[in-house]
Length: 80
Image (cartoon, rainbow, N blue to C red; front, side):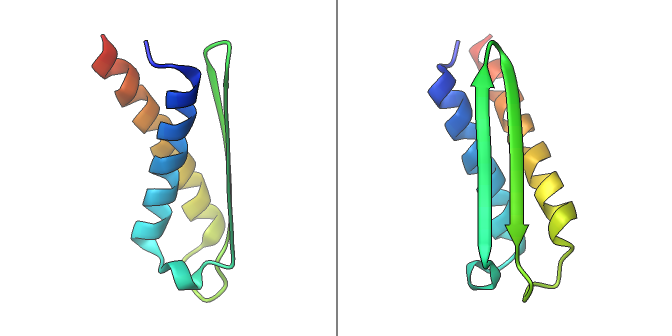
């Protein structure tokens, strides 16, 4: 079973990787990926401020959180 730290790191890296695959880093004014994993519950909150990017920041942030959750699901599936 993955450690809590592994879960948090996996989710954060996946979310950030997803965002930077969609927008240039130079277009991102602010990015905050908050992840917690307590008692088997993953909580993710992604905030993106990228006014220069040609994307809907809120939708991209929501999708990044989903990608982070999927990465954690994959992490647990690989442990089985």
